Image 1 (tube, rainbow, N blue to C red):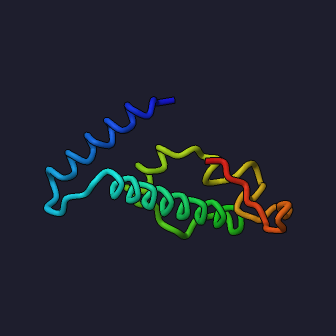
Image 2 (cartoon, rainbow, N blue to C red):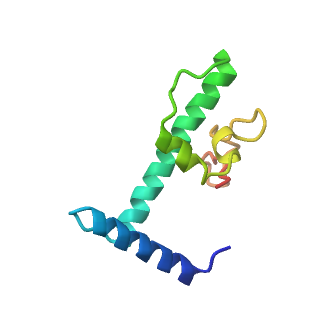
Length: 105
C-alpha cells in the first residue's frame, strides 16, 4: 500500500504536468474525479464486452487504446466478476431492506 503522503505527492506531480500542457488549470481533486470517471467508463465497457462474450460468444463492443491502458490498472475481477457470478446483480436485502451489491474494488 502506498502511504497517503506519497499519493498526495504523486497527484500534485500529475497536476503540475497536466497544467503544463493544457490551458485550463485543474486542481488535484478535478483530476482525481476525471480519473475515477475514466476508470468507471472503462470498467463498464469491459463488463459489457464480457457479458456479450458470455451471451453470444463474441464481443460486439470495440475496445479503445485508452480502455486497454486504463484496464491495466484494474483488477480483472472488478470487471468480469467471480467465475460466472454476476457481481452487478443485487444480493439479499440489507437489514434496512435495501438490495446490496458486491463491491470488490
